[in-house]
Image (cartoon, rainbow, N blue to C red; front, side, top):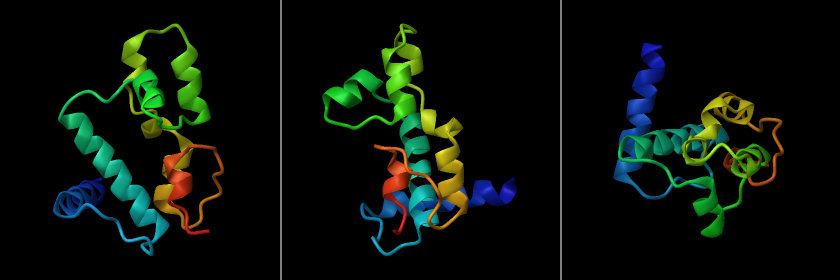
Length: 112
């Protein structure tokens, strides 16, 4: 686990030092960088709700859309659902991971 923490710290530092992730970077690196950026954003305050994200034009994956339409209220809508999604795990560990969910950021990072 210490190695994963060191990698997270490195990726967060990388994210702070640049605003662009190279397009030709390995999909695993792009996925890990995105995950680190979302964790960093969470440390600085709550994430937008899923309703807010959708209103601002962000696409929601199938799981986010399910949470958005449930009557659970605002707290679940502010969670980073990617933290518990199999797509994130696959994308962070495999090049060209077999994930195809519409509007999933990790699908966009795959080098296909």
